[in-house]
Length: 124
Image (tube, helix red, strand yellow):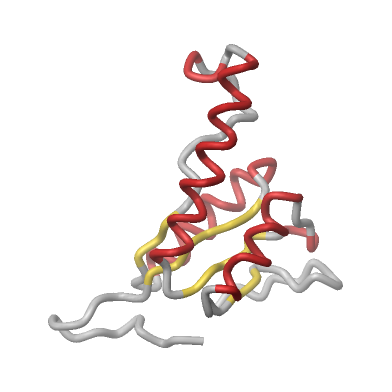
């Protein structure tokens, strides 16, 4: 794990990509808050497709948009120095599992907000 929370003007803060199920939107927002306060640049999901919105009210558009957003999120992982999996209760959905497989293929370290066994908060 990198420790670039303190940095000189010539360096940049650590970039963290948040990954997790959109069903835990509030937990993603909380993790974003903690990571930002810790001095990290946060790349996070930007849309909650589980909440109604005119941009994805058409079911066909919603399917297309989901694919676009999944690809966009992989590009965020590409840019990140590390990945933080937001997994309350140890839960990870299919998209998050795919991201967990993808990040190490790029050499990205992964942290979890909660241990997978007990749902313990391991945010750091």
